[in-house]
Image (cartoon, rainbow over all chains, first blue to last red; front, side, top):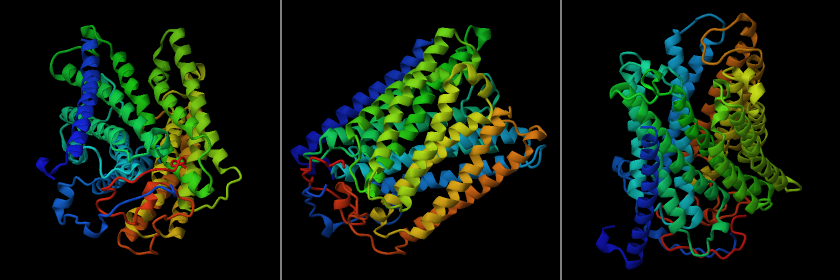
Amino acid sequence: MSNSDKTPAEKELATKNMRLAIVLGLVAAGFYAGIVLMYM
Amino acid sequence: MSDAAVHDDHHDHDHKPTGIGRWLFSTNHKDIGTMYLVFSLFMFFVGGAMAMVIRAELFQPGMQFVDPQFFNSMTTVHALVMIFGALMPAGVGLANWMIPIMIGAPDMAMPRMNNMSFWILPFAFTLLLSTFFMQGGAPAGGWTMYPPLVLQLGDGFPFLIFAVHFLGISSIMGAINIIATVFNMRAPGMTFMRLPLFVWTWIITAFLLIASMPVLAGAVTMLLTDKFFGTAFFDAAGGGDPLLFQHVFWFFGHPEVYILVLPSFGIISQIIPTFARKPLFGYASMVYATASIAFLSFFVWAHHMFAVGMPLTGELFFMYATMAIAVPTGVKIFNWTATMWKGSMTFETPMLFSIGVLFMFSIGGFSGLMMGITPVDFQYHDTYFIVAHFHYVIVPGIIYGVIAGVYYWLPKWTGVMYDESLGKWHFWLSTISVNVLFFPMHFIGLAGMPRRIPDYSTQFADWNAIISIGGFVFGLSQLILVWVVIKCARGDGEKATDQVWEGAHGLEFTLPSPPPFHSFTTPPEVTDATAHS
């Protein structure tokens, strides 16, 4: 399904999913960088 | 979920892609789940073949078949393949297949990322297994990759490190997808406290993955820079500390145990109520116990390394924290037992494997408590007692849970009932052989046989021969599972009903067997207050 085929509700859901994924991805990246930087 | 109203008008135009493209570019959670499960089964046999080499070499004292370096590669890569290639993908495969249809979602939240999470796996394992053909051979310093030993690995070292990084990336992407799916895509009325226990255990596992996999990635990145970029994180000569790696590794490593076992707990929490024909006893306490186990798992890492020497306060802290995990685990064991109490029980294959988990995971749990007692751990450390302990946790605790789940949901996936007598043969052959394989390891471990050594004193010869026979029978028994799965996939068997099992509840059992390629395109309304039961 292309982006233009999506209903407003589907677009909103996709945005919510993406926002949560970015937050969780940043948390994971933060743990990764944090553990290395802590022992530098 | 008897009064859950399900509206799915998509069955009549259930188009699915064809050819190799269906699998390469799949964004469908069922196809990706199937690929994860097939990959996991394949890697189970790859890792199993390595276990057979180990047991063939240890059948008798002295060196028979392989040289010590190759033996060490076998123990190391067997563990890496089984943990990252067989167990974790099996859990993710079951999550992919079942979570969307258990919560009434049309698919996973991010289907393209789901595809990428899967296809990273074969790539990562190609990197890892290619090291067998390199100068210096495959990793041989143990799956724990302790420096300085691991730094002595030849050309395969960067391949090992990058393989671990890719496996971590795959797991984290999978975890993010599961969290987003459950948080944002539940059907109306599917509140958190109505979620099936399998979904709950996976949410908690996903958070564990996000918190612990980056720690492993950080540790192996530091190994890489120590080897190639002149840092000295773990090099005492440069002001570093090799023990630091052990602390960081086990900060990942202990939660990893629960990453593997919690989904298995979730599976048997679905199965036992079905075949006891009673709601799960203590649903809320099961959720809180699972969360408690996950939380506590971050405070026990040093019980893996009592023998390195640490302050008495540290030893006491990690000993008591380890004991504390037994409390929520005991809650779960009690609840499963209470669910069966006075139930109208039948013993189909999924139930047999679930009861197997209950009994034999407890054996592994109790030996874990023994080695959590600091003073006595010094006797057990690095012996076959440890090998016995974690294999009881992993094989009958985790693999049995996955197998139980496969038997339980296979009729739903394929629309065909599996062959019950083959299933029972599989269970009994596996259960007898797995105990012949692992129980005597307690004896030889207590008597002092060290792990990861290809030769041993003749006093251990008899038990080792028996253990190897158990290993060969267990390995061969798993071919029955392959045959059962092939038969179902070919449609060879009795047609499964939508509910599949008389006592089964849940949204997944309101769908046809097999479910349509696109399910719950219109969300169902969950109105039953006891949806999780």
